[in-house]
Image (cartoon, rainbow, N blue to C red; front, side, top):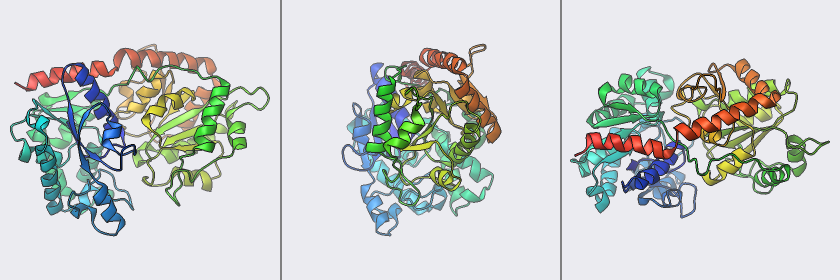
Amino acid sequence: MGLFFYPRGGSARVAGYLSRALQAFGWPVTLACGSLGPAGALGNAESVFAGVDIVPAQYDEAVARWARGEDPMDAPFPMHPSFEVRPGVPDRAFPWVSPAQGERIAVAWAAVLAQSEAMAQARVLHLHHLTPIHDAAALALPRLPVVTHLHGTELKMLDAIARAEPRMSGPYADWWASRMRDSARRAVATITISPHDQGQAVRLLGIDPETVYSIPNGVDIDHFIPHRPSPEQRRSHWLRWLVSEPQGWDEATSTPGSIRYTEAEVIDAFFDPETGEARPVLMYVGRFLAFKRVPLLVRAYARARERMSVPAPLVIWGGWPGEWEGEHPHTVVTCEHIEGVFFDGWRDHDELPLGLSCADCFVAPSTAEPFGLVYLEAMACELPVIGTLSGGPPSFINATPGEPDGWLVPPDDETGLANAMVTAIDDDAERARRGINAHRHARENYSWRHVAEQTVQLYKSHTH
């Protein structure tokens, strides 16, 4: 496998889970991937992908050069570009990376692939995203069949370029779009993560529909399981995450822990002052990218909170430190004086099952979400989910007739989103019913074993 980026988003989680599941099927995996930071760091590949044979590509020197004011794309091992446009980061978007720099990136990655004996002996090369690793593979491993695994972010960028959107109007946008289409056409097969993205891939890349497969992401059903902590346990966890070990960060500093709360603020928001019982909690998990619509979420929450029978808090779990597009949600909360929103920050994925178990409803109003793995993780923990009628989530939320497992509202509908949150909080019985359905649907249909089985069948049909 190849993963161009250092691990921080959903595609990295998919690569890790799928690698381990494939190994259980007798397909040993070597993963060449980006890495950032020492052992134990959030972006360190060998730590994140423990149990998988790793060939790391270190981005530390490129980031250090960027910190000194130099171009990180000109480092001995260049920084990876990004599918998103964000200010003040070392991984600028592809349309602003020159063709010469693109060629250097491919050559550097070819050296990474060539150094691995396991890569040379592989039967198939499974490449996550459309990136210069495809060009590197053509240089270093030209006889190896390539399966491209699209995670949606590359399709969003290519769609923006095709529409000539100003945010993607860099001088090299068309060059990269052409390069990625060429890479896609060389692959023997393409995996997309939802029926929506399957159609987008054919339209944007001009590839043969017969070679494009829709294989959804999976969920770790051994770790994401229903668990209802007691009020005392919830109290302990929320105080640790928000008071004693805060990781939330603000726009001014981008420093984890720059947002912190007092014990009194947490107790007053999360527990009934008379009974001590835990109040229901809404939770968002994810990055602060524009299509995630986190500012919309906090504004809709402010409207919903006024009508809730119980003032349920909203926890924002995530936001890679220093990374956001558009408005920073904490700035929106501060400037608009929105009460009840708590920023938990980015934490190790291993903590997420416990975090979800301390919540009661998952909410994420993304527009055209490529898939939405975290929705499934919440569902597996018996949380009903609130999403939008766009992208991947409608393919698995409320997909079973007569057995709803969440609420779907039109994209960018602040009123509809607020109404769904009010219903989810005020109707305890319906929330519980949909949560039970969510758990059953996730467990029965989206295990990683099931995903790996479909992937192995694809490999066998395209390798000799």
